[in-house]
Length: 256
Image (tube, rainbow, N blue to C red; front, side):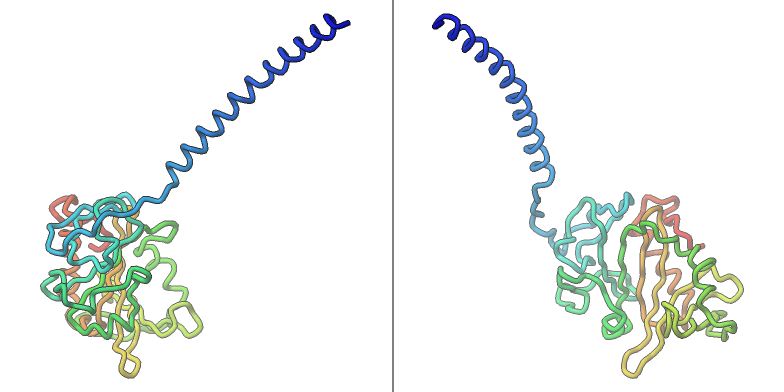
């Protein structure tokens, strides 16, 4: 009886050993997978911001490379080379140079890098604010001009300076209180959405351009429209600096 019991105990021990081996292997695989996921998802802290006086640094947004002067970057944590979801910039007009380090108008807390139209108006007539971000599923600017904006505008446009036309957006639409401003004879040459002057707050304009999967949004005072040709030429020069990889130094935007 004792020999038989011992034999059965040994058999059960062998069976248990065979079962433990797959469990041990499975546990090792689970631990390895958990370690890999933790390594990939572990937060990485950015290094020290690049000094304001440093040369332009390469920044990638939506797969497009831009050469950005650090002094133009409004948020310190964005002042790093490499990929970014967005980057917020400021330039002086008409020199298109970055603001001075003491210019508090161009600086923005890291928690809220966006520039509102009221802030753009308060900045005066010598600041151009630029945001570069991925366009995502949003239609390119030229397609918005052709297919989206016509749904919301009034039927009649009024003549503006230097061949521009002003077409108000209807009340109750997403663009209420704004005007669609464009070159009357060739709208695709230059167009913008502009808010109107409201008491002490001057109107500001938004001009968008697409560059592959990135979208560049330029915010400027409405009063600049009096010389819109110089404004459009200045935007061309600025984008050629930010994206010099394009042919002839001119980015392949939809502004022609």
